[in-house]
Image: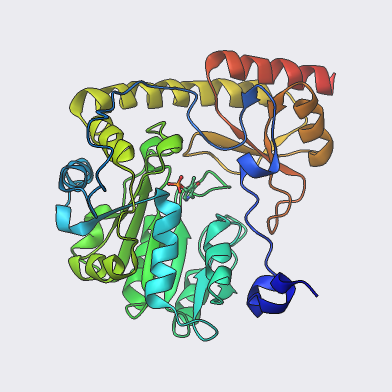
Length: 352
Ligand SMILES: *Cc1c(COP(=O)(O)O)cnc(C)c1O
């Protein structure tokens, strides 16, 4: 028996790590598998202080995000992507081998993986057939679970949760932390729940610069919550969480001119999404849910066959068939006009 087999923590033996888009598929020249933005915007980095440790939390950055979100800087925690925010919540609130979190599948995979790495249990309360919350079941399960993860708009579904249902959960699960992951909020036609932070001390909102902001490479996310929750999470946060170049770029991305550019890029992606959706209507694929994001989710006859055939032409999309209720379902990120045209052409070839 190797030293790893002998010493590793018991609960890690059965754990399969998160198969991120970047980890599970390599190569290709058109990447429509990770919900990234096709835009690569340029920024400047001041390299004269890279010999110094960065700040624990950058005031200018948290202030800029607070202004963008319409809240106070004391309600903002910046982290290495919102994935780190998920982990901080589990580490701060859940006792290993005792506490549980609630997830509502199909949903984002990292909530369960993060819980499992800390030996925290996962209680699944599946979405209803209309992809909305089973509010009563979530509320009932909440009496035994400290943290509830909701994703709206949803990855992988694309659709948003009904805000009234989220509010029901906030009201009737007052002793649980209700996390609303808004990674795709910039693409959504609906409102953010961030304005409810004043009303519900158990609300936590997750945001990221990885999607609409087109900055997946810098690893920057934000956790928005009451001052009390932010203070607690700072106890478990690493001393220097964000690299200084990340902070510099994130601050620039939140300036007025960058936000105007963001708006234009989001509008362009939304009209591209419409184009792709219209083109795919004539193919043997059916849309799973109306999208409020930068991706589309389709059921097809043979997901493995389709994903493989496209990958052979250098075009990557993501198979979501492992998710509950999503047999033969693929997720396609909306790319640039040229990338989407290539996708449409390849699909035509595949199906004709
Ligand atoms: C992409 C994504 C994230 C992760 O964002 P990072 O900030 O890059 O860690 C979180 N939640 C959902 C639903 C996502 O799709």
